Length: 314
Image 1: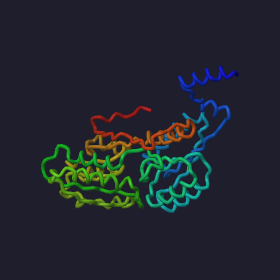
Image 2: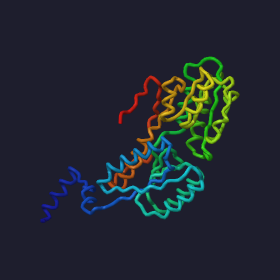
Image 3: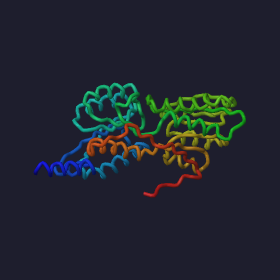
Image 4: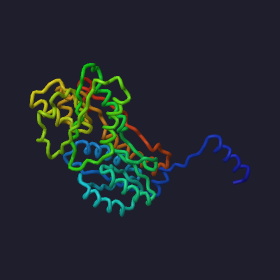
């Protein structure tokens, strides 16, 4: 090619731009991209099952472009989590999707994993104080703040609010604490709401038979900062206690049942299936397409009431 022709080609590139067809190149080379998925076991836990559905949807969609997923599951205890960490650290891959359920252990793991210089995207809980890792999920603090607003909505008289913490055997997620901090912050920011008084109760999943009527004596509203609002709703229904406003999270079948009965008033939906899909989508765009991707993607805070809940037809 003569210099004159080279100059003409360069002029066309400069005018119209040129982007190498990365997908075509990858397909021609039959290149594979292995992404590790590091999550809690999802058997009998509807929220995490939904995450997997979203992840598998992305796996099917992007599989034709060389994306391969390898799963690492841990039980809801720190011993199982630490045991699985060793496997994840030894596994060679191009990206990691991670749900940091155990805060302290997850921070240590991410510090160690950072040496691999591999992109990490977290779902469900964001424990990174900097922008070194990506996050897809709700702004936990803002979701708690929203729950505070819902608790105060259309209320003028004296109200007793109970923050009811129903935890697994170990509950050390930052998302849990951030929601409660956000809840209290709403009332701190609205100093005129002096008619609200607060109390807290904590029980373990294994001890839900410990619920008793005294816990709810004089209570007008209950905030459950996770997906177990149905446990409170069931107890109130069984004991014929009415007129208590309940606010919780997630469209679990049991939560929806009590939402439709009018016992749960508000559910804040985290869209777990969307979180799982977008987590893999982030890694696909970053590693396969080599695009610049925003590190934080907040899922919109969706308020579900009895009147606006419509089941998704599969």
